[in-house]
Image 1: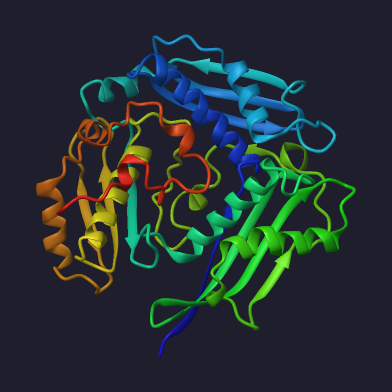
Image 2 (image 1 turned 180 degrees about the vertical axis):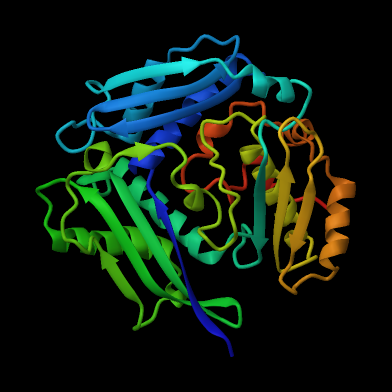
Amino acid sequence: MERYYFTSESVTEGHPDKLCDMISDSILDAYLGQDENSRVAVETFASKGQITIAGQVTSKAEIDIEKIVRDTIKEIGYDNEELDIDYRTCKVDINITKQSQDIAMGVDIGGAGDQGIMFGYACDETQNYMPYAIDLAHKLAKRLTDVRKENILPYLRPDGKTQVTVEYENDKPKRIETILISTQHSEDVQMDKLKDDIKKFVIKEVVPQDMLDEKTKIYINPTGRFVIGGPLGDTGLTGRKIIVDTYGGYSRHGGGAFSGKDASKVDRSAAYMLRHIAKNIVANHLARKCEIQIAYAIGMEEPLAVYVNTFGTGTKSDEELANLIKEKFDLTPNGIIKYLQLKKPIYHQTTNYGHFGKEYLPWEKVIKL
């Protein structure tokens, strides 16, 4: 009987890095909303009282970037420069240039916007075909935000993190070993009340009771105090939560970030496509778990290689599945964009609580293979 423990983390939308991801994706959506052929690669940096926007954009759209920045910070709930950042008073610095002609030359003819490797993954541990630990960590982080915004726990502030350790037995989730939640809060709340409230209104509402036992450890704000948060407590940067965005470390990652990039960047679009394919291999009972890797060269349409690993759980060989993928799916950048309809302004809804496992996103659709 094989037993092991695996841990994944998630963060709330108020985490400094996620604040930056959300601003970048909101800017991307604004460009795509006016011009679906916009080429966008926008990075956001958050620090004390300041948001810096930089990157490359080629688009016919005319948008008010500063307004988008302030509206996004307001939507998250940051309004106090003494504790985190204030959407009304923070400085916004913008440095946007046009996309390099050297890159555009390859993308214009339908090639990949860069070289690189991407991965997709799915497994049968959850109903949405995500690994159990990251799925639960996302749900806890989302609930942490919901109880704040719905005024169930009005003393909470936007910054927060969750972490879940799962005990596996024979490669299946058996129980939860540890739950860790760190949440920003107002100065006047007592720690005992905060811990009791988080257990009652967050953990109890999200975590299946049959996965908890007397040995499960629960840690809430283990340092005891988390008043200063957001960009005041720690700088934020677009693309620094790529493991949170994908599979919580349970599958490999090619290294490319998602947020702020239009779909001509295969870092994003190919990762979405591979998730779609891996999910459907599992959903069609061709394997219990599946990881796919793909590689591109800048300016070239067809991928250089496709790799499949079903970890010995496949009903067909990995080679047969790789051939099936090549036959059934158009893996050129334009083919992916058309198949998943990635020119639409859908990216704001991808930013938080994982880019995968949300049934309403096009790459999560289940099809017959």
